[in-house]
Image (cartoon, rainbow, N blue to C red; front, side, top):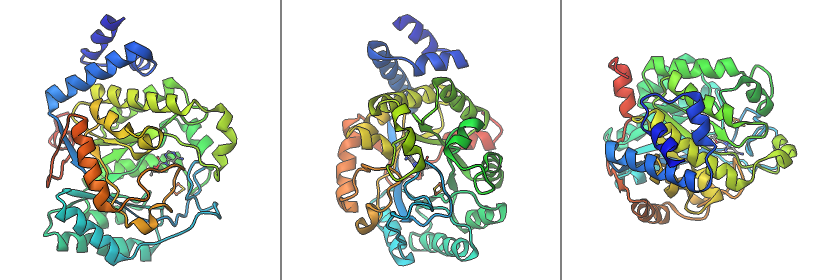
Length: 364
Ligand code: 5AD
Ligand code: FES
């Protein structure tokens, strides 16, 4: 059996059948696959891991995704908004602690007051860190004009998960209306690439109704879209969301976790030079979840530097880890964890996606 796996791991082109095979592995065969592909990756691309200090600055959201705890239709979500000064302080903290980059994330809004505010915050972060902190933003679907304005203000990477590349499944986990439109979301990803952002997307793994074949297609979608960065992790049901009614159809949490690691390892074989994040949701299932992801192919980790007071309110899913720690505790605990995974932190580096530079210079 391990011979078949070795053959697949060493292929130049992985087919859909190969991916389905890898994603379905269990037991000793799976252990072999994860270990071999993790080692191959580290031998070829080095053992650096990059930090992105994550600031989840608001959970006000205008959308209603069926899986998300901060959806507009959840009256029980305790809403918060972190002021500009504290966001900039958090970015300074990242800078002083050699994180290299920050990620600004929030519920989705696209009103003028919001978009202008973000522009100012981006400029100010660049200002107070002498342009040294790299900025990724994850603020949902916006107009081309807004994306451009934010790019010009200093953001250079954008994360917009497609959530699933399967249109039918997309409409099982989102309302089907003008606010939640599959084609619009795809177009946003194209627009981000056109503007010049390093562009990231991703999916949730173990959604109700989702099948392994669809996950293999998700990986092929990332490749076909020429994506520079991926963040993907297990779906975790939230009691106050519409998808909760399908909880009996879900894979066990352990299986969602295992398949998530298989997805990361398989994607690393498929796209060796992209950035792959060790999603926080992995840690909600297994306390060593993110470290395992680092062993098997992830090279980005996002320490939470949101001021502690509000961390517990950014609950996209329940059991979110590290909601009590202050940023300093988080950074100490994390560097130890990264080293335990046999990796080294690339301090003070932006840790850009190598794939991006190849893509924009015409190579693959
Ligand atoms: N379980 C796991 N991930 C979730 N996200 C939102 N809700 C959940 C959930 N219940 C993810 C989505 C979104 C990202 C910010 O968080 O993929 O894009
Ligand atoms: Fe906020 Fe999906 S519920 S973007």
